[in-house]
Image (cartoon, rainbow, N blue to C red; front, side, top):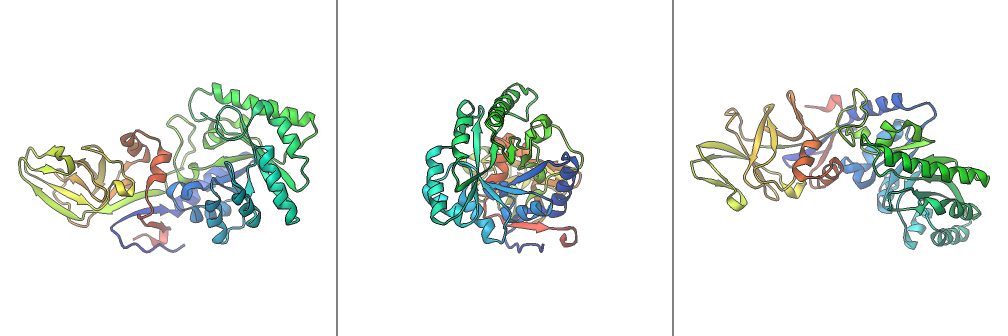
Length: 380
């Protein structure tokens, strides 16, 4: 894939070579006959849904996962015909779109199933669907204690075809697996009830990335992977696979250099005042691009060294201290997230500034930052 055009001096680089390596390492780690679904919701966590989906398919993904119908339609409009599971709940209009574009919705109640069945009958179609069982997340799905009866009823609808039953872990990536195992037991009990009713489910799936890594006894037929192929782990304590590394780097360039005198203030709110003469760099990127709205917090990499952010960053600019790097010049490259030289600023480092999780940071990088997809032969 060719490198995207980049005009603005602030951008996101996606390392496709590392993405392929990550997939290869995951495939080697997957138990035999265990399938995987690649979750590409929210623009594949900010990495580019179409590009990540295509790489996942090439790596053997049997299915893709989205949460909105629009996300799924973007994939279809770009020539992707792989089965797509649309998780969550659907409006009547969305049900029609699912049929029209061969999408697999989650149907979690009899009322919605009846609407989908009527649409399918009108088109003389048999429509695939999955059902989600709420085993303790208290989000989407039918409660585990009622699920077997509901599934049995939906399984009788001739215009619908039950292809999968799923659940979702609330806390699979922490050291304490007590609640995760309780959820698993609820799911297994429900499956046993289905077996007693002679109901066979083609695809049973419960594991997200944390579950895949740490709960091998919960793998069932398929696991749902999201950030792991992107080189990011869901927690600091979950199992590691050697060689997996982040594929995203967020970069900019020094747009201006200012000389500060003693007493000069920097940025909105005047929350930094120079105590000595020194230089600062102005970077053309800010919270409008997804970086946390910090005040005298955080660091960037310039010439392989850390430079601290000073003052209050703005929507389109932030300032960093150049005291330790007199060699820095205008238009030098700056790394906000990723590696430069022997140092690295991780997505987890930025998440701490925002008091949030890595998922939020990754998906929070705005669309106005162009994504540049690179392979080894295309790097400068």
